[in-house]
Length: 103
Image (cartoon, rainbow, N blue to C red):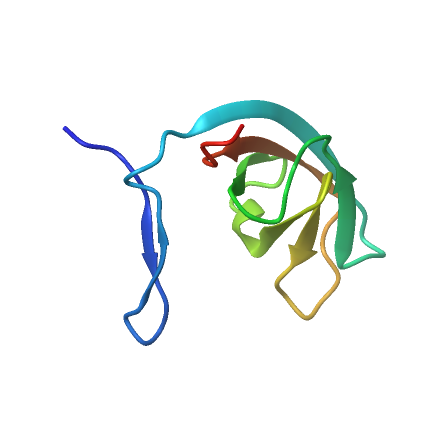
């Protein structure tokens, strides 16, 4: 059985296709979310803007971790909050993966 990840945008255009890449687990990091911010920069050595994926595994607030998303950058990633209101203070557990064959 093949494994992978495919995502399409609102126009049905394929924007992510990881079915041809091997995902490599790079580590886990805890992110402390404060109620006074809507974005958090998290250092992660070796990360690049492409070929990396951050998955929010758990939150100490049941069901709320899907209100956050991550944007990879050079040696860091940014966690952003999706809602208009301030977030609840909590800790996110994020798993970091690389699907770039150069790593």
